[in-house]
Structure formats: C-alpha cells, structure tokens
Image (cartoon, rainbow, N blue to C red; front, side, top):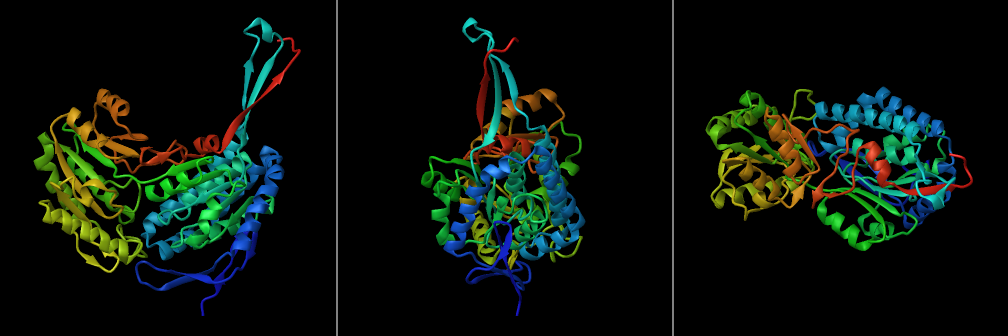
Length: 477
C-alpha cells in the first residue's frame, strides 16, 4: 500500500479525508497518494492566512529575503529529487524537468533580491504653494492573502511564481495545485516550512473541484492568481468581479520566419523542438509557424525533417525530447483535431499517430480556420504552417488570433523587430528565437484572451499590492 502524502495546512503537514491517486502519464503506474482537505480544513487555512497577514507584513525585509534565499538554495540541493518527481507525476522528459527546477531556483533568488529592493518612492508635493513643506512617501502594501491556482504543466516553477512574490511583499498564500500534479507543490511546501517565516504564511491544499467555488469567492482571499485555461479564468473573473484577479491563460503562439534569416535549418530545428517540448503542453509552445513566401518551399521540408528527428519515448531517458501528454483524454482530443483538419483539406506532413498518451509530433499546412486546430489552443505536440507574402499580412495573421501571449520572429532587421514590438498584440515579442523563451525576471503575460496581469517576480509583486501614500507636513524641503 502506497503511503499517503499529507498536505500542508498553515505550515503543518496535515491529513484530511479521502485521498487522490497520482499516476504517471507515461506508464500509468501509481506515483503517489495525496490526502485531500476537508471543507473545515480549507476554512482553517483561509482563517490562518487572514490572521497572519499583519505579522508577515511586519517582518523586516531581511527576514523575508533570507527565507527566499533558503528556499532557492534548498531547491538547488534537492534538484534531482524535484526533477524526478516532476517527471514521474507530469510525464515531462527529464531534460525539461531539470530545466524547470533550475528556473525555480532562479525565481526564488530573484524574489529575495526584489524583497531587499522593495522600498517605495519619495515625491515632492511643494510644487504648488498650498503644499509648501509637504512630502509624499508612496509604498505598496499587499491587498491581502493570495489564492494561487497552479496548472499541471509546470508543477514547480509556476507554483514558485505565486509563492515567491507573495512572500517578497509580505502576503500569505494558499496554493491549490493541479489535481494531476500535487506532489511537487507539497515537496516545495516542506522546504518553505524550514524557514523562519510564520507557519501560516503558506498552505498547499489538494482540493476537490466542487469545493473551489467557495474558495474563489471568499472575501478573505482578495487576490486570485490563476495559471490555467481561459474557460476557468472567465468563470473566476465572473464569480469574483470585486477581486484582483491575475490570469495567465492560454495561447496559440506564432513564430514568423523572414527571408533575411541566414540559418533556415537552425530556425527549423529550434521551432521543431519548442513546438513539441513537454509534448506541446506549454502556453508559449509554438503552434503557428508563419513562413515568408520567398523561403516557404525551402523551409517546410527542413521543418518536417526537424520534427521527424525529435526523440520521443520514456521521459526518464535523459535523451528524450518529447514525452507523453498529461492523460489519454487529451491525447485522443488532439488526434481527433488532426483528423478533422485533414478531412477539411489540410496537408499532414508528418506525425499524428497515437499510442496511449504518446502522440507523434505532427506538422500540418493549409489548415482551415474553421477547424479546431485552426482556431483553438492545441496544447499538444502539433504545429501548423502558414505562408505569408509580406509583413503586413504576417502581422495580420498573428493578430487574427483571440490570444496574445507571446510571438517570435526570425529576422536580422532592427526596424522589423521594432515594428513587430509595436504592432503585434501580444505580451512579448522574441526576436531571433521562438516565442517559447521566458526569463523568470521579465514581465510575462498576455493580451486579449491570454489573460491579465503579469508574472515575473517584480511585476507580480506590483499586481499583488496597492499604493498607499503617506504625507508628511511641516518640513523644510
């Protein structure tokens, strides 16, 4: 019998009622069994977060920074343990799991540095006669405890992007991990509990879906930070319109290949890899490949060859580049989308086969916009190729999506780069690379249906807080 893993309620390992089985998406083996929180325990966690807010905010910056430094260092010390656990419960190939762990180390390190810099601003108010002798001090303070709802695809680093900035500004946080991947978040909570932070600073609760409506609308959690689907984001926004709701949602990321790019093969290999890394289950994995007409005929065979060369299989093999999808339901969904597209006239260049949760990386062209693959986020190892004639048309196609998270453009021209930055309606433009690039300190988020607010530690700290001004009077400035 597999031992049951406790959840963390206000910094203490706790057991509830019932349990959740976590299975490997690759083998189907039981990875672990997690205790589920009861309604009473959820209430305890929320009440504890609410009660500890003043204490956590009152901690000196060096205490919060020291805790964040400790978490960063301990993740690094237990890196292989984290990576193996991510691969086991998520199915992510080990090479990508190790990369995720490395990023989480950086995320907490950045938070420690930002906590030390979090100071506020001085503003002279004596610019008008009636404010002579007055000085304003503006600082940002937490709106209150944070509810962080995390997805399955980055079970460590996307939890880190909710926990780290919250600790840095002095806000308690309650994490609801994805049901498919709760174990990694629970291991992170174990490390947080080693610090000198008040115990109620963090709770990590596996929660049944039917219990979340009450949690989302609880007024003691005035901030909700969700990374997930746009459908879930819309429901939360409608259910809690009075709250600060930060949404990092979906995308059908596009990359453009301009005719001036000198290394078409290199671009093809980069696009193939990052259209299929983590089985395409990333909001910024490449889904749409826009290729200029002047190089289209040369580029598509190179891209097809690069997709075919990807190493698929056992995610525990360090050489594997493309592992399984999270479950068989989603694997079946994407093969049905591919079949729908080909019936509607699309050309399948390679891939599309399925064995259980493993989907062969697919590349299609001439996909009608009326099909699921032509109009929705795939979140799977599949890309579509689109020919465009000039920048006007290419930008129009990129912007034709309901999403706007990130876009990439392979060009050497600085004027084209700045035009892309100005005209593409996305949260980030990556020049000379795929849209899948992300540094954890940079502002990250989307436009349109891709969400609101920004991740990236400093940006998230702003989203979790509000300005408050202090006016000092009778000063000789």
